[in-house]
Length: 247
Ligand code: NDP
Image (spheres, rainbow, N blue to C red):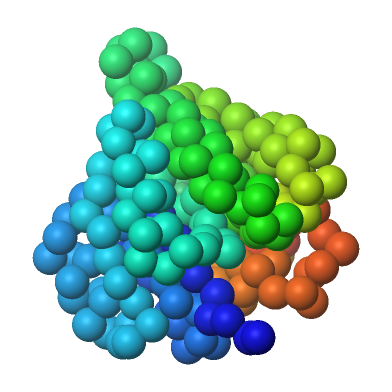
């Protein structure tokens, strides 16, 4: 029986997450998009069509995550793909970052990725299959100034990808990570617009000489989600126009 695959994409109402949701739904994967802003989710779902549903949920509410997974399981009986895409950034000199600032970023970008993945994996293990895709960042690959907490969180995501992959791959669950370079979204606009020096530096060390599009990341995510990537696990794939190897 060829059952429709069920996916969860956190932060699927905007930017990179939306592009991944678009790719998945167009390819027949039923997709739950998760975010805090109901209006944004409704509008995204309207655009994505019948293979999309949304849940308004703040991922920093760790205690409620089991309930989120349970609700989806009650409706569909299966979760095949989890894309841990939601994330927040904060750009300021490290001396101005309070402990609370730091913890907030870690909570959303790292702890919630662990906690949601743990809950989803609990329902994947009995089936003996599943697919986890994490989204990290170039900040985990080289030193990027003024994003200390974000860097710590994304470095953690890459480490967790490997740690998850060694535990879960023997159980049939592949775990991979995409490290996007600079992709045109509201997040990168907030970091780069108004800071022409930073933007010029980004472009000058990106051999392809431009920002990427959310669809570029979505194409890689879809590949990882399919059997075409069936022997890939524990990998960190840059989708960055060469930014990570640029001079
Ligand atoms: P956006 O700001 O467009 O998207 C982030 C999404 O995360 C939003 O839809 C937001 O939804 C959701 N989100 C944030 N916090 C929470 C939360 N507590 N609970 C639920 N949802 C939440 O950014 P991008 O599309 O650019 O970023 C997507 C991912 O890609 C992030 O992890 C980012 O770090 C990563 N990335 C982006 C790069 C870029 O250049 N754009 C480069 C490298 C990595 P809502 O506000 O409704 O909660």
